[in-house]
Image (tube, one colour):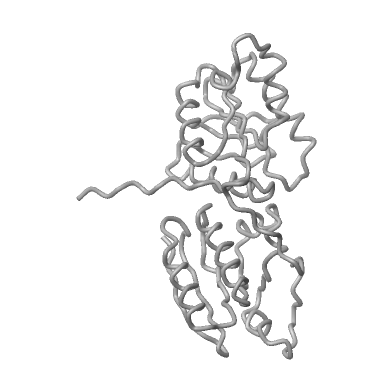
Length: 287
């Protein structure tokens, strides 16, 4: 869980965040609401000690930025970890925020008369216009899998649907009478992302899964290098095929595996202007 600590420097609010940014985002919301009530110019989020961030916290930071912007304030980011910076670049959010590596610069940026040692870069003068989430189309994700893994993939389909994603699964989306050899390549090309589901059984199996992977690889070649499009997902410990190793895979059997997948899909959704990917609710504690 994330630990937030508020302090000030030259009258500028700095919020130090440490730990894993998962779970409830209420602490950040409360801090931002307090800043707004106090009529402050904005705040600096110091992320130096953050080890991981999930999709709900990424959305909360963007929401905080918009809240402050509407009130004439600003939200600056300080000491952004590499993994989060990669997400900001991929989703084009790096052009939205002022990102600093020195606290002095972050504070001085609120005062036009003060010089900056490292001038801000990448930020656009006009932030993108916000579109209500309900007016955006859902992110489409093609589920590439072997028939032997169908039970696990059906569960994955349900969890992704619950998260606001539109997963494509042959037994759900193919209509009777359609020619699957034509429809599946078309579905791959028309998807926003492809999740290649891997298991110890499927990786060594010849058949249509290998052809689906080829279609996915062909579609991936049409994407820019910084796009999150093809995601290998291990359903269990297994070898990742050589041709898929250039992409970072996710272990869906791990405790945080599905949450990591949602974070990647949220980044893709933000980049394409799709509706927000919802995090799974935390399990209820037993009384």
